[in-house]
Image 1 (tube, rainbow, N blue to C red):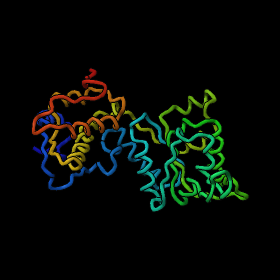
Image 2 (cartoon, rainbow, N blue to C red):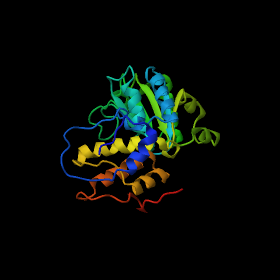
Image 3 (tube, one colour):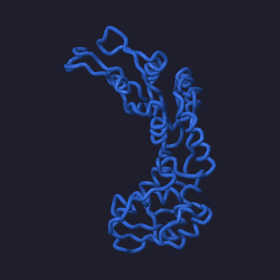
Image 4 (cartoon, rainbow, N blue to C red):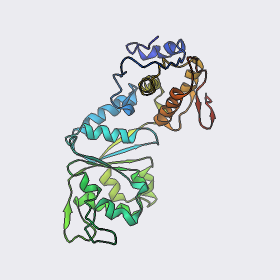
Length: 293
């Protein structure tokens, strides 16, 4: 029996309790969608998600800097993609920069570029990642993990929108929108002198905070349905839902890895070698999925 999306969310649990998790290998006749599934991180109609969607509508239409905060796995990168795709810069590049993986010794050459002959092995000039985003958006991910040196360099280029390439004799202008994301408490880092106050104020023009999944569990049925239908198509399965036992685990588990963890669990279930039988339990690392009541 297929799940009926038109029913009120209050009846989802009853519906799923009646539906076992059956797996088949036949190809689906059509791809499945969900009215909330244009972007996985935006699925849900809980009060926090309604507020986030309204906020996204406001900031996406502008060109202001946005700071996206939230725990690991809550969908910060997906939100950045959504903002870019619904902004006036949507037709231009979105360049992602993982600040935690960018060593100080390579920061200037990677971000600002270099001229031919600037150093040994520089046989050709390189524009740099910031110039590759010209007219578009730069997404600084894990921005709370930058070194003091990197913070100073990023602050300068955000303020002036120009920089010198390595080996260059003139400054290069940039035109891009800035989005930043972190799972850290930047206010605390500022108070501890581990993050520049001036950079924080530059980033914190508009803020979107993504709550952990445990604080919006009413959205879990919609997320489960979306991901199962996605993997039905990808793995050529016919999964209809969860068994009552598995559903109880899903509802009571605290999901420390948030939406990413839920997605990975459902992907593992969908790939499991099961020929038409019923999944009685959901398993997550490092062992059995245990509910926490």
